[in-house]
Amino acid sequence: MSSMLARKSIIPEEYVLARIAAENLRKPRVRPNIRKSRFIAKNGACNVAHKNIREQGRFLQDIFTTLVDLKWRHTVVIFTMSFLCSWLLFAMIWWLVAFAHGDLDIREGLPQPAPCVTEVTSFTAAFLFSIEVQVTIGFGGRMMTEECLLAISLLIMQNIVGLIINAVMLGCIFMKTAQSHRRAETLIFSRQAVIAVRNGKLCFMFRVGDLRKSMIISASLRIQVIRKTVTPEGEVIPIHQIDIPVENAMESNNIFLVAPLIISHVIDKRSPLYEISASDLSTQDLEVIVILEGVVETTGITTQARTSYITEEILWGHRFVSVVTEEDGIYSVDYSKFGNTVKVAAPQCSARELDEKPSILIQTLQKSELSHQNSLRKRNSMRRNNSMRRNNSMRRNNSGLIVPKVQFMGPEQNKCSMDT
Image (cartoon, rainbow, N blue to C red; front, side, top):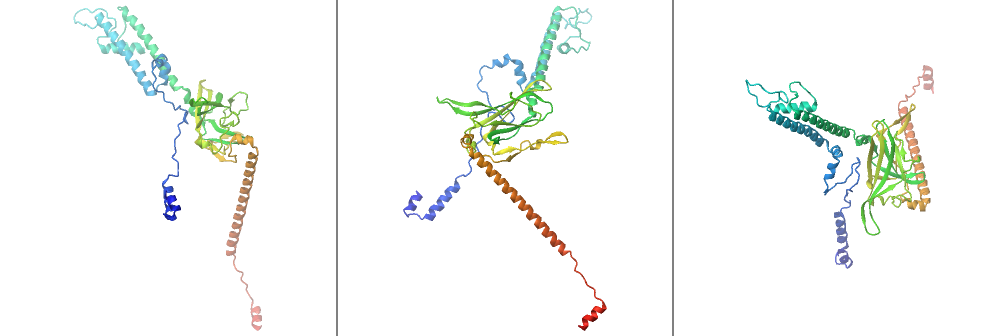
């Protein structure tokens, strides 16, 4: 409105320009950083919440796996309560057996019949005897007799139940301590992935390493791209998983993870990254998931390590620095440089445009070579200038330290000078 009035010379143009500048200053120039949701976290945990599960009884059908999957505090509570409840239950039964047999009726001066269990005259004594039977302590004060067949049957039953509880709970604790994801904590991935040119092709690369000396046998690696897609029929697939190949010289997909490796995926026609350029990368809603599987050498248990890379964690035109050096015949790995990258020359176009116009890659490499030569020339000129400055400063310092020559004249020379 103000611009129209300015054209008609109703409002001065200076006022309009000031108004437009003020409006532009009020508008936020930085776009808000919207945090994208990711399917797999950096530590490998799945970011999925299961809700409205109606068939809860399916978890009880596989009770052992349910116990192993529980948290440690829940496992400790169940472990403690299982023993306490079994001791109390059988203590109640032992007390009822003693009550039915008349072992609790103690009359002074009268002969007492042989009890089913000696020294069980109260519920506390029955509880202590239940603990002794189930954990096979046997202090010697309370013991079984041959009077009650029911008590003998109860003893056999409690021993069997106690063995079952011990086997289940100890097996559950062993499986929780020896779970495969504990070994996966020492399998590390680089925090960021890179896209650069390798062997004349654009490649998606990341680094993987193993911190332990014990090997991962038959280690295999898979890469998937998860993105939201819409089918031609209009169906929305929120989590569409696409497998992408991994460049590997071996016929199988196994890798020998003795040192950190750079895993490369060639962006070709089969890749979902084929039509993505450097400018389009930040606007893409995709996630690259990496899954590393293998057998632990020491335990023989299969382990799996996972991570993911979203578009903000993919660096275009970067390359990983070398971390392996040879020192005195031994290969040394410097993990402080594990995720370090350096910027390299790479075309900003997509792999599709690069295949259609191979000259883009040649021009990019030529420009990088010229820039590299210019940088070398600048460095050499700076070194020459610095060396010349040092030489000049040294000359100045030496000239300041020079002592003037003093000439001593004899008497004859003085007389000659006076005559002249």
